[in-house]
Length: 478
Image (cartoon, rainbow, N blue to C red; front, side):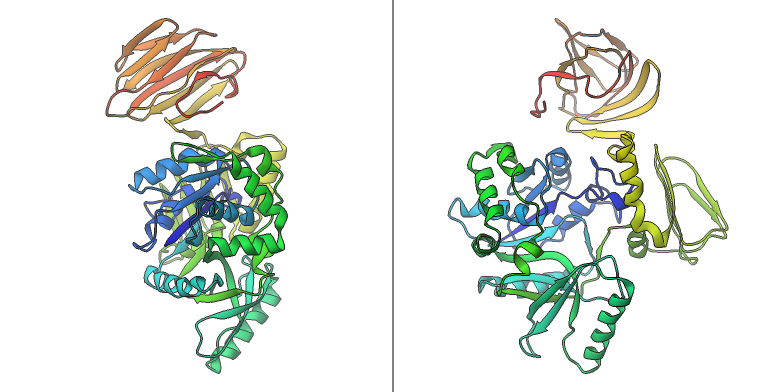
């Protein structure tokens, strides 16, 4: 049995301002009408088991909702209180099965990759399956087509010329341009002689038995394994969510699977993969993956260009125009505008770090913030007031709560709202309104089969999101 393990813990800072900490790139429809997370699941071979998802606590409802949208079930969603890199995450996945006497093959995949040749991908999985059944730890090496400095590399050595399996010689960090060009030059020389290539991009995709991985981890990084075992001893399920002992997991060392196991084991092998793969890790990479017009431009949203070349332009909600520029990234969201040279798009993390240091919300949240019950969009704010548009999904409800510093006025725009306010429970229809005094216990529910939309006007001396005292909550939030 092959169990896909989907690692979905990244924050995608290099795709800011579209990707934010609380709504990262894997949950955004960057390439087509489905998100990268959904694409990862939809391209799985039909004979694999339901996927096991590993994500951050703060992304749990995004993952669950996006599974529901594509009518897919999971083997569970393991919630990490904090990201500890890939070695501990995979250990948690392996322990989930080994602790119950199972030993499946784990197909470890990142949630944010682009793979356009699905048939070739499936063929590589079949080859990896045979090797993994023989206790090999398999990684998929991407056949490079350029001197890329944004990826790590794997140096490989074939057992023989006819073999589809390559032994791992070493893993290399992201190289400078000169070194990357030397790797490709060596590949070209080998290819001209009809010999297997020596250098591959490190895809971060793997396959191995759960027990084999845990045995190798115990051999080389026992502290990681021990922390993960203790984290799982008191785990419990909350619907599809698998919650760990957070205190124990926080003690776990942070380490990638490459460093923890794959570089040290004698059983690691590489399967070459040439499946039109891409790691959408920057705006330049996304521009490369998109269909372009005759001037090399990618335009999304309401965009007008004049004498513009090789530029990526994105507008979320208003007209964006550009004249006489080239090789730029222009991304306009509801609360932030980015203009960057494409060749410097890897440096956007510097902007995000500055936002974090300044304590600005744009590092973490969009203006539209998704919640398990729907979303809210902060339309306007100034001293003493804030206006939000709130959408509540059919059958969903907000927590029973109160606020110490603000009062709220609700106006129903669409649907029927069931409202609890103190001891009163009543319904409001479109164009009707209610007032929620400061300190009053209240709740908003949508018991209908269509979306509920309201306009909320908050007034008070403090309007932060942490001014919520939850008394009851269907989603077990504090």
